[in-house]
Amino acid sequence: MLGVLGGMGPMATVDFMAKVVRNTAAACDQDHIPMVVCSAANIPDRNAALRGEGADPLPAMRDTLRRLEAAGATYIAIPCNTAHLWHCALQYETPILILHIVDAVTFELTSRQGDRVGVLGTTSTIEGRLYQERLSQKGLSCRAPDAAAQEEVMRGIRLVKAGQLAEATEILRAQAEALVAAGCGEVVMACTEIPVALAAVEGELRTKLVDATEALARACVRVCKAEAPVSTSALAACPPPGPLPVFA
Image 1 (cartoon, rainbow, N blue to C red):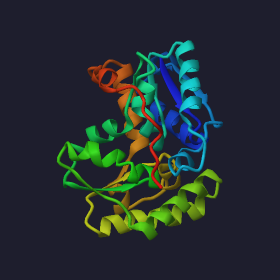
Image 2: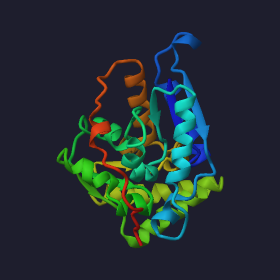
Image 3: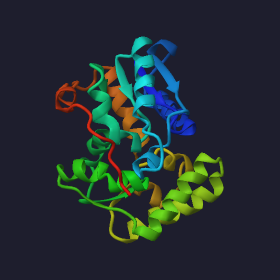
């Protein structure tokens, strides 16, 4: 049973669940993957914490993880990119495999052309090098927006959370197009709010966008349907959690 540690944010959690359903080959209800979901919208803001301006979200994420364990989850997915900066700390707490969203994206990128990847995500995701470290291991280089453009990305993300999708779409489309114009063969939508805003984008830009939420959903389907080997290396590789990182 797939456990979903969600609520960061709620719309992104619903979007992820829909993508798990859409990516499952099923002829009847029973062919779908059982899911237990905790949309823990009370988890403190991850970006504020990483700026040193808010509470550490790890205790609340840990409590949510315990609920999913108690409910019988056998795999865990976290449909929030920034929350993966605490992936090792959470994985250290449980024998249940927590699928990593960047590994899921990397799996899909390796079949694409080009070696420069644009990354649209929160400032914490970019400054925490969540994508850069893993993609570089596959010979892929990352390009993120400059400081002014990154402020616009954050504004777009906040607008999605506030339900103002039309304005968010305009902002985030422009930033994705700027990365393509800068030579990126693909642009990873590396915040789970961004695919919500850009869901209706069509044309050439659509072919350049890589949906991290969709990649994670597909990885969950492969693992839960036993179509992919399950690596336990992540369980052994995570050290005891250290102090909260701060990206001021």
